[in-house]
Every structure is written in structure tokens, then in C-alpha cells.
Length: 187
Image (cartoon, rainbow, N blue to C red; front, side, top):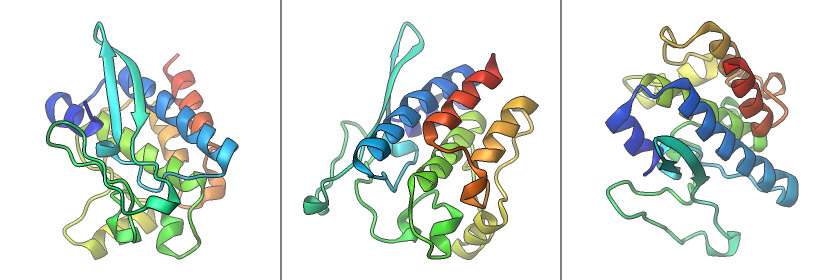
């Protein structure tokens, strides 16, 4: 199932499950960046496929990496959730990092920001960044205003806050490092 389906049917998701999803996706983002210098660009709940075995996360894969030669390719999973394979503008991204809104370009740290937004949505069942209009959403992203994490333990909030830093240099060095910090905060 996609993380979107998981949110719709089971949210809020327990922190251990969220940490497992972030671990799998963070490792994949790190591999793609480290080996190929490639970013995903559209990390969001409907682009994450999650599998379970005996009630525990067995794996989570990021869908939507595309060959730059075939950007018109669109993949849809079985079921109702469309998969966004390639987005052409910042406003098509569900969780664009602040640096994208200022035209600074996309890096692996932008994907980390989007993964952290997805973690917030999994933990709370609500979009990480919301507003009545696109202008309000953009303003909230630029100010670092995200959904309330009131029910989330304080030690997890600190980890997530760092991954959501408006300044990308204040985030973890990689999505894998974010995932590791989240897991350590649970222990």
C-alpha cells in the first residue's frame, strides 16, 4: 500500500512504524544521491510503497525515479493512489523544500525536507504544511510553520524539526542520517 493509503486508513501511525518507513526511504534516497548524484524531487506519501509482514514494516520503496530521457513516463500503482513520477514545477510538489521556493535549486537535502514532511503526516494524520491557499502554504513553508506535533514525543519533535529546517545547511547531512537520528530518538 502507499503511505497515502496508510494515512487514510490508519493514521496517526505509531512512531516505530514511521521510523521504519523513514529508514527504508532514507536509505534509498542516500544510495541514489551517493551513487548517481540523483534526487527524487517528489517525496510524498503517494510515492512511497509500504509492505508489512506480521504487522511490522517489511519494506518501503520510493516510487517515481525516472530516466531523464523518459520524463513523460507516468506510473500508476494498482488501486486508487496515482503516483507522481515527474513534476515540472515547484508548485506540483506536495512538500517543496524552502530552497526550491527561492530558486536555489534542488539537492538531496530537499528530499530530506520532503521525507520529514511525510513523517509528520504519518505521525499526525494531517498534512505537514497546510493553508487555505497556495500563497499561504508557500508562506508557511518559508517560515517553517508545520502541523502541530503535540502528540509526538518531544525527543522525536527535535529530530523532525532539524530535518525541516528552513536553511538546508541546518538539516542532517543526508536522509539516511535523519532516519538514523529518528531511530536513535526512539531508543
